Length: 330
Image (cartoon, rainbow, N blue to C red; front, top):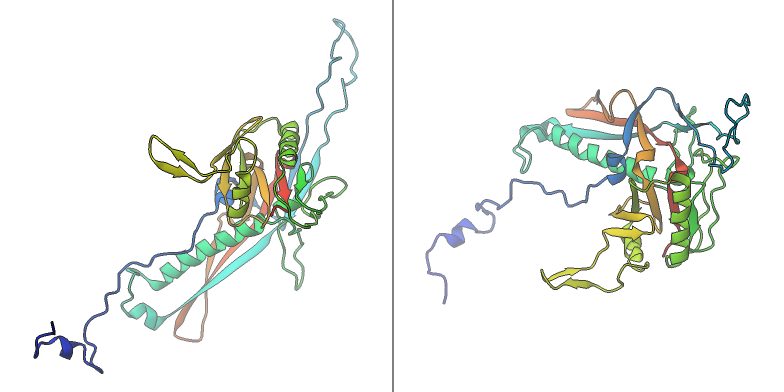
């Protein structure tokens, strides 16, 4: 069956005319995942110096001989007390620039009901937050003090972890600065291997001994390593089916350890081939200037608007012994 001769269809879509409007939706869909579970879940504090510092302390070990004679005049301590540490990190500046021409603001743009600059600032703000998340969750980004011609760098998660480390392959542990994780040293990553149950259990044991509290501990890893966690004891290697609902279950959301359940949080920004065990209550993000992101209007010699977005931040590690890292997992 053919189109009836003489209809307007051919004329409307004739070569050189094309006067049928495009069917373009009035919504812009962001196809890039935007999650920052680490920086969104930790404390937020103020930084007032390039070298942001904090104090940590420890309790002495419990003893069995703490028995005193009534009215004893002894003023000697029962045992050696813990050691107070002064630890710091360096402020890092991350930035983005949004440039929008005046013509772009004048024209009718699909999916942007308001100003194009507002849309661009929102988009770049999310990109900045992802940059901060990724930088903080690296294994080997040691802190660098800002100097003339040198950008300051915030020491990352792995540069503060000393007490609890495991390796799949032949990597070597972060020994810290005189045994203290202060952001200036890092582990040496090596070859990869499958996650090992004994190593994982020993890591949990060590974290428990260093903290005694798993209430805020989470397992955070990239997708490939989340799949590796499925091979651990107590997690089925097979895809399970819930007969009651007919659902196919092919993921692990909670790992039930010897010390209780741990939420498994996929995070694409964690260092590749790595699983971090993170006590969220022991970390903070320090930012300068009273807010996370600062926006400054920049002058331009063209018919365009230019705005600079900056964040001045660093990672604060309040109790590294309550956290752990398992590196070099295939």
